[in-house]
Length: 183
Image (cartoon, rainbow, N blue to C red):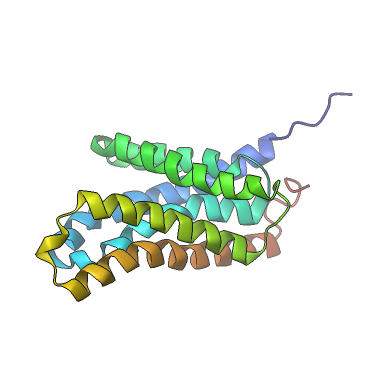
């Protein structure tokens, strides 16, 4: 009898379903990001935070190695199909955020799935993004208080979207989605 695959078809299909749904959401966030950047740039971090969703939902639901990065890459491909011009942004963001989420889960050998672990991951993702924005954005155009809020929202955005993702993942698990996919 063949040994059971670590990433069964059921797991991959679940990652694909999550990736498609969150990829459409990411494309929508990409579409509004120009308007937000032009008219209310201070909240851009909240919009960008949506990119944590694929990994959070997949890890909360499936609780397996590699599901965050796989789901992120599928979401990036879906978003890129909608907005082909931004394929590089979507794929690089997927690799960065999905990779960080996998790394945080790997540190606990994929055995700790408490909410704090997801929030720690979100804060780390937010700090990495905020640091990149610190150097890339023209923050001098903002008053000091606005700079602080702007950077803080790049950290709080992923945390807020992580709460949403945990809620979705928990609800899907309670509904019996991916029951056969879990260990």
